[in-house]
Amino acid sequence: MVRSFSIEGPSGRLEAVLNEGAANAPFAALVCHPHPLGGGTLHNKVVYHAMKVLSAPSWGFGFPVLRFNFRGVGLSRGVHDGELEREDVRAALEWLENEYNRPQIVLGFSFGAAMALAACCSASRDLRRVRALVALGLPTQAEGRIYDYHSLSHCTIPKLFLSGDHDAYAPADQLACVVASAAAPKHLRLLPNSDHFFAGQLASMQQALADWLTQGLR
View (tube, rainbow, N blue to C red):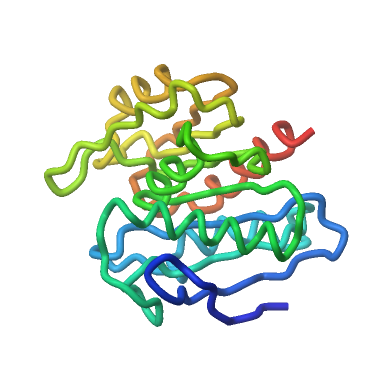
């Protein structure tokens, strides 16, 4: 069952959609969408396909999965900032905590991955409920901006970095350096002949995600 509603964010309400999953699921999950200025919303194709892995019975997980629109997107209040969206992620995690009171899996695509890591790997935040982080298409450079991920050096949450080996926003050598700087446990998976958007490779992305979750959540 799918529910549409809003949650309270730091700059006002955030539009949200919940795929409810199985009642006895051991985890709850959050999926964060790509850059709003590039048309990113909770309905993004990569976000949707990742959600299906986490929630659809056919993949065997059946987690409740929350997706939401960052500030200024769709029906969400506020204005795009580029940094403060990490606080939107934290508001969504707080909603999941209050609703389900169970361990959390946090996944983001592109800008959503950057904001998810920023929200979950800050030394000043107590996020012990987050048991796994997945960064799809994590950007290292985009639109003249260089992304840095210094907080990863002390982030001991299990992490999957899943990207295409032809990702224009994260050249393989740059992404490998980011992953090398991150605290363990961590895993880097590059899908061959795949671009930033996993064009023609969404099924491969889904399978790689499912494989890691099967191993990493034991």
